[in-house]
Image: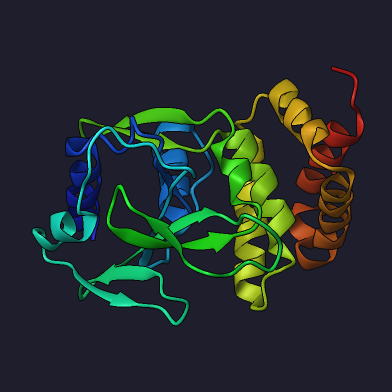
Length: 229
C-alpha cells in the first residue's frame, strides 16, 4: 500500500497542491509523525487517506484532480451528500473542508480542483501553522502536532464507534509528547470557551476508556490547565 500512497502524494506535489495549502490529515499524517518526528509506534490500520483543503481555495492553476489521480489507477464515485471520493482495490481517497456553519452538511464545490469536498466541524483547527516533512523526496504539508492533538481530543467523543474514539484519543496522547507545549497552550487558549471546556471534559472522560494511559492524560490536562505562558 505504501507504493500507491507515494504515487498519490507525488501527484499532489507535481501539481503544487502542498504550496496551495492542501494538507495530508488523518492516520497517514500520524504515520509521518511516527516516521519523522519520533511519535511512539502505533499500528496503522486504515484503507482511507484524507486531504484537507482550505476554503476559499486559491490555486495558482486549475487542476482536474480526478483526472490526475485517474492516471495512477483511481476511479471516482459520489457520496450521498454529493461529495466525491476516489478508490482502487487498496485505498479510498476523500477530500475534507472546514464546515461553514454548524449543521451545514452540503458538499462544497472546489472549482480549482474540479471536486466536491466533505464539510466537517473542527477541521479548521488543523490549518493552524501547518508544517512540512520530507518523505521519499516529497515535501508534504501536514498539521502542526499541537493542532492535530487538540483536534483529535475534541472530536473523539463525537465518534459513534468505540474503536474510532479510542484511536483518536490514543493518537492525540502519543502526538502530545512531541508538541511544543507553549504552542499547544496558545492554540488551546485561542479556542472558544465551549471548545476548551469540551477538551477538558473529554480528557477527563478518556481516563475511564484508557486506564493504562491515565498518567499521560493527566500530563495533557496539567499542561492545558496551567495557562501561564
